[in-house]
Image (spheres, rainbow, N blue to C red):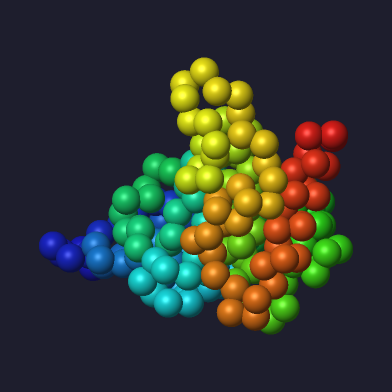
Length: 179
């Protein structure tokens, strides 16, 4: 059934292609959860304020509750279900477990996807609001606790696991650099 409000889209999620018939107002979050069955991304606030629904689109962080599914067509989408590769946890996933970077776990999928995107942004030399020198010839900002807190500020944790989250991100970043 197609009409002016419904149509077929093709989403590439975690290296698998999915064809979905969606209302043109369907969010990426709802398409992932209800259309594909990937329930790892959580619907927290449904207003883009908490980050629980964060996924990666072409490696960049997006809050999937504010992203229309039709706008994600053609992008390579990575959800928490696809974050580990070949059954091996990424360093950020291992460090979240090792350093207790979660409590209830509701925000964890969004935190992890956001951390992966944030670490890539930092590695590319992108400054943040707390980066001291943002001039074009400035060296890449050092990744310290203040940088991590600022860069992850769009992901809320109602349990208050922030100190452990920051430690996990910093530890994973060191492991990725050393590895």
